[in-house]
Image (cartoon, rainbow, N blue to C red; front, top):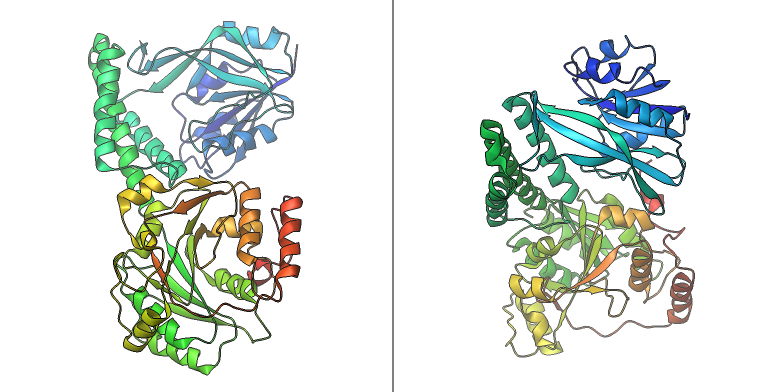
Length: 510
């Protein structure tokens, strides 16, 4: 007979909690993790001598269940919901069955609406995996639809029934629907796409499947209600996801050094964006006063906050000034360009449209020849199409949402990495500690940054036919520092580096 701790998550569970806890009196320990109950949940729990009460705000079901398991005194953990009741047969099976730490155990669950057993319309009797050894496995960290990790384990089925009293009325059903659809949208933000059409057909198909194909019509009013609520859940979770995917905050970081004429044109192209970033930060690698004057002039009428991040000119230190600028950002998504990239009106919009979780985007550039560059800098005007004379790589000048989505592909390498048109999540930047400031002088700071992103598990995608930027012509920088910088890059590749010591962390507030 193994010592088993039972864990329960609870919030305002006074209706069914007494029945749930009475079924668990033979277990030596019950850990109840309360998520802010305002009813008698905690008072009821304290009436049972084997129950220990802990408190935590809601952090997602997976993280909460792992937190509850961490409070257990025993290695064997049985996870039960506060609206579930073990039958006496299942209690005896669990307490007397010989347990193997290389196994996890499941049992049959019956689902009820009120007092009626439902075995249709998506509420079919199902097997749930709930008994495990916390030394060998745990719950996933998913906020909703969490489960026990079974990799390397065998799953065994135990006899006995777990009764699940899901909802007693429509009001409870709708409250839970609202909670779960919100969690779905939060968990899948920028991981899944959504639209009004997708939400509609998902809802239609869910009702058709549950009510007809899964025999909900055999259960009368309850079958119709559950099928309709499941369809509503499908509709609202994808509509909420659509809203969540459109709620991104963005910071545009522009790197510059002593080319105020080019910076002025770039800022003008930013102000003309069809979808503006939330802020613009100039990463200034020690420019003279002419650059500051341009920035101050534009700050007076710029449509979003325009910030100037400057450090002293002690040589080419692009990695350092980018880190300083990115440390100032407030947006969750950072788009990085150089101060010689004139932007297509849909530049920011297309980057935001293609953003994906755990992914950084590499955009392309349209190379402008000297004559057209001179015209743009003099007139402070431009109108560039794929057919304009004086441009190189004309396909890069095509901006099309359809083609961008169709052509965007994952890449496992750092070929053609250029920081003049990149986008990434701020959280991913902090995860690898930003750019490596050991790299000074021209070259390889972008590639070294990207290789650590890839090593940290962040996917690279290219952005063709979107995020179009026109690169003003200028002579190439001297490459005298390349041997040293190549060595830093080679070391990062060989060592599979995910972190650099000399990075952005020094600029972050504690």
